[in-house]
Image (cartoon, rainbow, N blue to C red):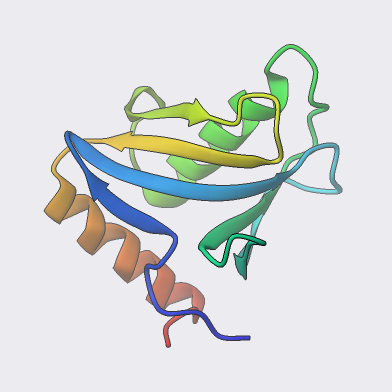
Length: 113
């Protein structure tokens, strides 16, 4: 199933809200693609090798996404789903610039509609 480009993020005050489905204790730290959740909303699917204990998987996710998107780790924060596989992150900064960056990143991965 192909999802609409950039459907995994939306504008919010002070940056972007990013939906992620995380698989902890996976084989590798990697972004696997886009998926549609049970609620019908698109989310980024990611895997990290860290176990979901003491926030280690969340920290690994932030490190992975910061590297992928070339942003500082301090601009990313889990704001919903700290103990769930379904997470919402805040990416702080200029929403227009960040949306352009994530759109270009998605296109480079071949996830455009």
